[in-house]
Image 1 (cartoon, rainbow, N blue to C red):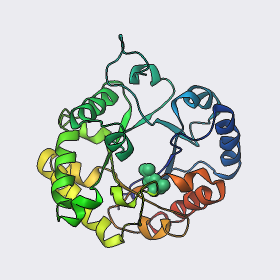
Image 2 (tube, rainbow, N blue to C red):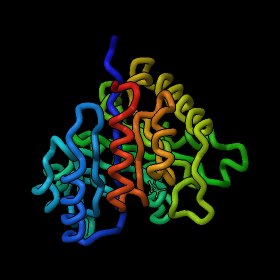
Image 3 (cartoon, rainbow, N blue to C red):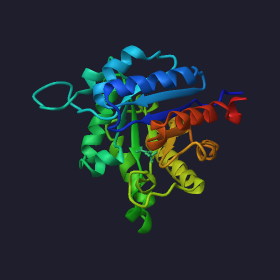
Length: 262
Ligand code: PEP
């Protein structure tokens, strides 16, 4: 029997916590979350906290992810941080988050270049895709998922597709949006089937079966178990609930206790 796929629990702290606060919060998590072969816990603090936290973490317990970076490796780009500068501190990098797409007007081209830059620097990109409320209302969910996927993976080769994680995050489900509501398991299942179908067409069947597909959008400790039990969902990207130690630790415990790991 093949062993079940790994589960990823990712905490996106967004623009919260000073480096000192992030360090104290990490101390609290360190005491409560034990390393696991099955569940990879990834923390994405803001850029200023990456270097100090990289010295503090036990990498068997936690990995770090960048929330953002610029795709060029160096040069005259005032205010930017390149992925090659972050490489020693992080193993993962979030790309294409809806707040980057819609608040900072990041283009599909920027996103594709960031995915490529992460791979070039040996980091795993976590490519976020998901339709807006309007796209869903207009029946354009499948088209939006397809276009974000094909554009985001535009510069990825067949050899490198195994280095990517996809996070399905419908924009209307993310808690920072007005009127946010959590997605229904059936919607998430439909999306992950679609994502795997497109990956299969673009990169082959094996890639589509092996690529980790996560869900993100208003997940909390009460709903995490239900989402994690969707066949084909390999983890969760968590914003708001990742800032509360009790909630986040309970979600990690739920992931560790999943039936597939018994
Ligand atoms: C996110 O911003 O990626 C996210 C999933 O946030 P929240 O869990 O707060 O909806």
